[in-house]
Length: 128
Image (tube, rainbow, N blue to C red; front, top):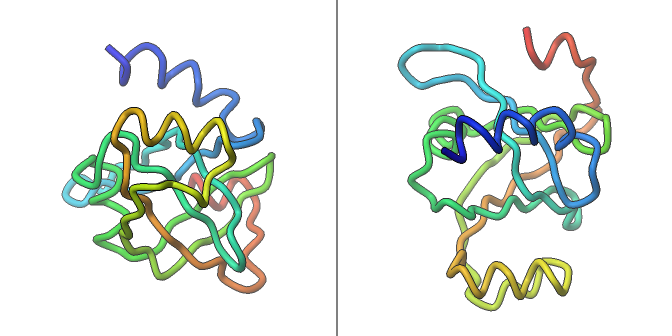
């Protein structure tokens, strides 16, 4: 139900809201382009993406298969590289209320990625 209903609605605004982002990725087998709304936060020279549905989610496996992906944050599409899964049960890297929510639902893993230098991309390139 979440994938069909809520995600389709959130996709429309996730790339613009603080704390949210839109991950652009391709299916490992199908090659089909997908957009997945996520909670993402700038950390140093990259981003951390909360894995609220776990590390075995299709979008996570798609990203790990290539190691890089595009993400739309606050209306800008960026290219992230060196995607890897890390664990932090405290979730102290996330803002206060988000950290509390992540601990409450047991989401102790996140995707750590580095921002590729000069990575701002046009929206048409990210989806094409």
